[in-house]
Length: 92
Image 1 (cartoon, one colour):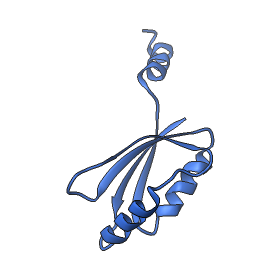
Image 2: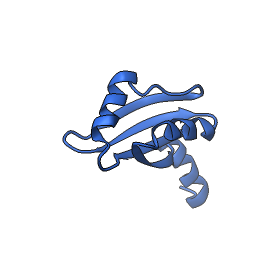
Image 3: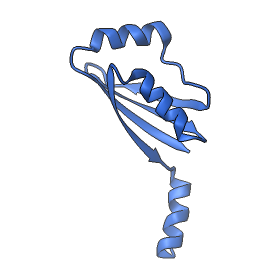
Image 4: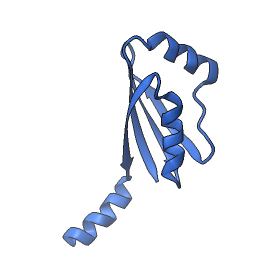
């Protein structure tokens, strides 16, 4: 399953968050695959699309950064999966 992680760097944590990212490159824990990661220039927010069979891997990654960032985690599906559901629900 895919999850969209949206984060904001907590006030006063920009430098430690940047240092942590530059030092480690924020690797994914076992069971979590990074599909893509994006940073909004000049802001404190960013997004990562990750894939995992077990949501605990997502929780693990979020917990690793929770002292510096606040997260919103949203399960997401791609167009083909959404279309399958719409076909069942609406018969189209």
